Each structure stands twice: as structure tokens, then as C-alpha cells.
Amino acid sequence: MPSDRLPSSATALFRSLRTGYRTNPGLLLVCFVTTVAAAAPDSLLALGLAALVRAAVTGDSVRIALAAGFVGVLATAGWLLNVVSDRVNRRFADQAAVVLESHVARLQSTVATIEHHERPGYLDRLAALRDHANALGFLYSQLFGVIGAVVRLALTLTLLMSVHPLFGLLGVVAVPGVLVSQWRGGAETAAEEAGAQHERRARHLFAVGTTAAHGNEIRVAGVQQWLRERHWESWTQRHTLLARARWISAAWQCAAQALFGAAFVAVVAYTARGGVPAAGNVTLVLAAGSRLASYVAQTITQAQFLRSIWLDVSRRLAWLEDYAHEAAADADRPPPERLNSGIRLEAVSFRYPATERLVLDEITLDLPAGKVIAVVGENGAGKSTLVKLLCGFYAPASGTITVDGTDLSRIGPARWRERLAGVFQDFFRFEYPVRQSVGVGDLPRIDDLTAVETAVERGGAQDVVARLEHGLDTQLGRTWEQGADLSHGQWQKIALARGFMRDDPLLLVLDEPTSALDAEIEHQLFERFAAAARSGETGSTGRITLLVSHRFSTVRMADLIVVLDGSRVAGYGTHEELMATSGPYAELYGIQASSYRDG
Image (cartoon, rainbow, N blue to C red; front, side, top):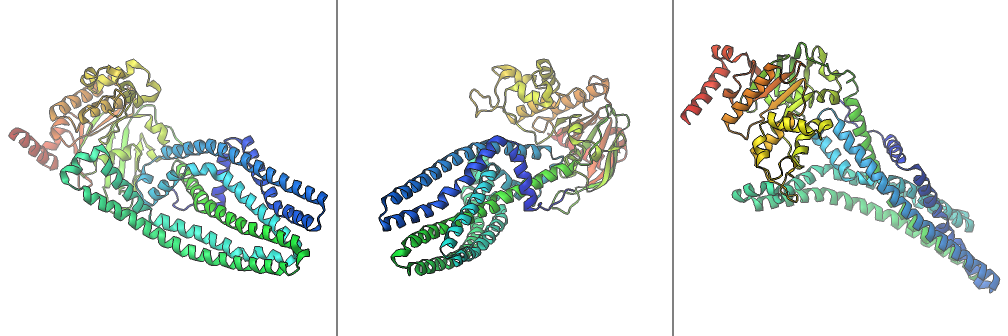
């Protein structure tokens, strides 16, 4: 299993910078030069003002003109460089944000399993990464800003030390503020992570209370007020943790700033003892010292954002990169071109992330090539979990799954899934035109009209398409212009058609594919699936067709039936063999048959 640890800040920063650099190296160079160069005129303005005051005191008009010109050049150069720096940094940030956001999306989609979507700790990391993915686009400008701030501080301290060497100690007095800032960013980030679960719950409750899908049930149950209270409670818990951390860190920050302010007042008072001749020095100290305070604050702010957002987001990004890489590091073998022996599960056990209960316990099972195999059992018996393991969505906690003798964990997940097809009970509603909603089941053939029509026929969705005004060109989803609204059962038929787009899968999975349809339609569809598989109509790949259903009467046509009960295999064989054993299958089959007769 990939490591839970976040990479170091230095490593993560380097990798994020390397990714961002590829966006536009030339524009990035302009960003660096203009951002850092803008620090010089701003800092040297104190020197120009001091020269102007000295010239004014002596009454030398030539020196006054030169000093005024110098101040004007510095002011103009500073303004121009800041404008150019801001524009080019924003342009680069926009480009980099697209690249980095796409990078994050690609990483998440290429992780072999879906475990990172179900572990609370991983979800908190991914939520922060999604929320701040765009912020990574500003990573370079933020880093250049920190460098520019350091340059300003260095120049300003040099000017102060030109008046008196000990005035450079103002920089030392500013160190507590920098240290407090670094601690403050970490403390507030820790508070944000501690409250992330409350924020996710609040957002979930908001979505439940404001989306149409839940509207009917919410109103019938009358839980509007309850949802609002839970939503407010979750946000309050999140903000309480964050506010406490912010108040404590703000108090320490104020103390550090007060120390610097007292030292600055003492420096000005000391310089002013020189009277009129010291007017230029007083001006220099006032201008440089006052700017030093703002530069320290700016440096603190820049460093705080760099640490609390950009560095932490960079660490999460680096962790996701490592997670995606490590999860598939050993998957270096291709799937077979055809199945000869089939798929075998040997002592496979599995529990879901952050839980202790075994959903599957020591499952040993053979799924022979070329067979239609049904998996039945009561709710919670582990049927869908078995399917997810076979698809590689999870890795077993123990035991092995082999495909023609090759460990499934050694087969590249993307290549394995190219040889899978089917429908899951929690199917997705692709709100595209029908031909695309079906065609995405085999992306290389999405525009192949013949393939789409064949898939529609296989999935029994002809009646759905026939009722649509524009047939296969009908836009699905009522939220779109001229979009057609389908019932849940109609959506399921579209999903079935999508699952049949591929002609030569090694494993065809039908996980409760007709749960929204009545038993008679399901029975007819399953009979057609089984007949097609046995006749060789669907290819010569040794395909295994796996049917999952809670309706026992519709799976009797399968070559083999697997009965799951209490996380274990409670039966395995043909319908006739299982009925002869008087085990759980025969008992449950009799109960369902009786209920249908009574109905």
C-alpha cells in the first residue's frame, strides 16, 4: 500500500516548481526579472528622499533638481516594473493553473484503486488539494515575491546601517515576527485540517438541502429545519477550531510587532539628536525604517501564504503523485489476449478502509473461462465487493486473484480495464446526446454509429431510443436545452447499452444491472445475455460473464451459481446441484418463488 506520509516541503516545492516551469519557461523568466527588479527602486526611494532633504537644507538648486529627478526616476521605474510584473505573473498563473489542475485530475483518475476516495484522511488531503489546485498556478509569483521582499529588506537594512552600523539590529528585532509567522501558518493549517471533516459535512448537508434529487424526500420527511441545524452546527465546529488557533497566533504576532515598533522609535529618536545637520539622516531613517516595517510585514505575509497554502498544497500534490505511481509500480504485465483457464480467487479477504469487519472472508473460488456465472446472496453478502475486486477497484486485504495464473495486481490496471465491460448498480448518468452517452462505453468507437446501435440492441434500450424525439441525437438531462428527462429505469437501460459497447471483453460484469426494471424484463435480458455468451455471438476471448442479482429466479440459466452468505461462499454449482443440497440457495429460492406466487 502506498505511504500515508507527506513528502518534505523542499521536495514537494521542487516538484511543483518543475511541473509549473514546463508551462512557459520564457514567460517565467520575465516574471522573475520584473518581480525581483521591482524591489530595487522601491527600497532606494528612501535614499533619494534623504538626498532631496539635504539639498533643500543647503539651498543648492542644482542638487535639488538632481535629487528630485532621481526620486522621479525611482518612482516611475518602481511603478512600471510593478505593473509589468503583476501582468506577466497573472498571465503565467492562469496558464499554470490549467496545467496543474489537469495534472491533479489526471493523477486521481490514474490511481488504480478507489481507496483514496473512501479513507477520511485521504479525503481531507484531496479536498484541500482540489480547493487550492488553482493556487498552485501562483506558486512561482509567490516565490518570486518572497525573493523580492528579501531583496527589499537587504537594501533597506544596508541604508539604515549607512547611518549607524548598529541600526542594522532592527533586522534582528524583526526575527521574532518572522518566527511567529512561520509558527502561525503551521498552527492555522493544523486547525484547518482538524476542521476539514466538519467542513465536508457542512457542504454535504448544503448539497442535500439545495439539490432537486433530494427535494421530495426532504419535504415528505419534514427535515428541513433539522438539516439547517446540522449544517450550522458543522460550520460552527469548523470555525471554532480555526478561530481559536487564529486568536492565539494573532496575539503572539501583535507582541512581535510591538517589539519591532519600540526599537524603531528608539532609532528615530537617537538619529534626531543631531539637529538640523542630521535632517537627511532622519529622513533616511524615517523613510527606510517605516518601509522596513511594511517590508517585514510583507515578507511575513508572503512567507505565511507560501507555507500555509502553496507549500502544503505542493506537499499534497507530491503525495498524490507518489500515491498514483506506487499504486501501479508493480503492475508491469499485460492482460491475456484470451482467457484459457479463467479467474481464480485464493483465500481472498477484504475489509473496507477504516473498518474492521471483513466483507469477504477467505474466499476461494474458480470462475472458468467461457462460462456464465451468477452471484447471488442477500444484501450485504459481499456481491458488489467481489465485483469491485475483480475489476481492480480494491486490492484484497489478503489472498490473491489470478487471471490465467497471473496475479491481477501485476496486470496494468488501465490495460486490464480495457478488457472489461459491463454495468454497475451505481451507474453514472452521462448527460450527453444518447449516441455519446452510450458510445463512451468504448471511447475509440464513440462515433461509430453501427457500434452504438448494436449496443443499444444488446442492452434492450431500443424502446427508450424510439420514444425520444431525436432518437440517438437526443440530448439527455432536463437541465440542458431541449434535454430529455428519463426515468431511473430508462437511464439504467442506457447504462446497459453503454456496458455492451465493447465487443471482446475478457470479463463482462453485470452488477444488479436491472434493479430498476421488473422481474420479467430482467429475466428476459438475462436469458439473452446467457444465450449470447453460450452461442459464441460475443466473440472468442473465453469471456467470463458475471451476473449479480438478488432475484434468484432470473439467474437459474447461468452455467454456475455462486452463493455468498455472511462474507463466505455458501454454495457453488449449477441451479440443479444447489437445489439438491437443500442449502441457503434452495431455501432463499423457495422463499422468493413463494412470494411471487402469492403476489
